Image 1: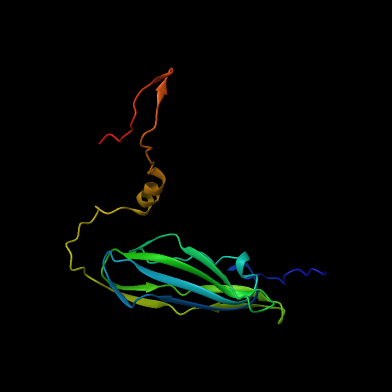
Image 2: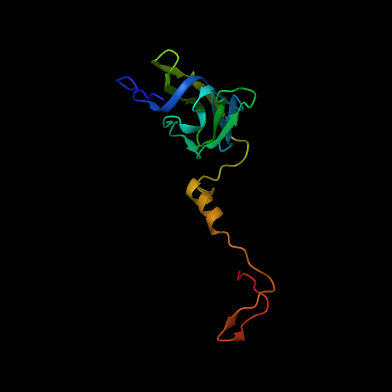
Length: 178
């Protein structure tokens, strides 16, 4: 096996992808309302080292609350080469009405068949955000950090457990204090 170095200069947005790929992005709807989440999906398909790279950091509009993406990898088992699809799904929650532009996603990779760098990108997309029919209670919802902490803070109680302090049982049943 002879290993060759990548040609210089490397593209600034190169994250280790080698192969031949297509990129697409889309949303699960064309319009939404304030505080109603929607899904923005980035999908890369092709042949190459799909499970060994990530996309460049994505910058979203400041009026969107953005959650960490869910990453999926689906291998096409009917081919000899590593062919498949890599998907990133972002949950986005608009906090103001108006038109919000979702960014174009740019992605560079090395194509070993052509022995050259290639750059592909998606089109930008606009989502129309309407006012909500419900009363707005700004500041009363959970932030991203609070939602993450809820998942870490939940502790389960064991009913019917025996606790002891110095050999004597303290309480037969354990219940949370409210």
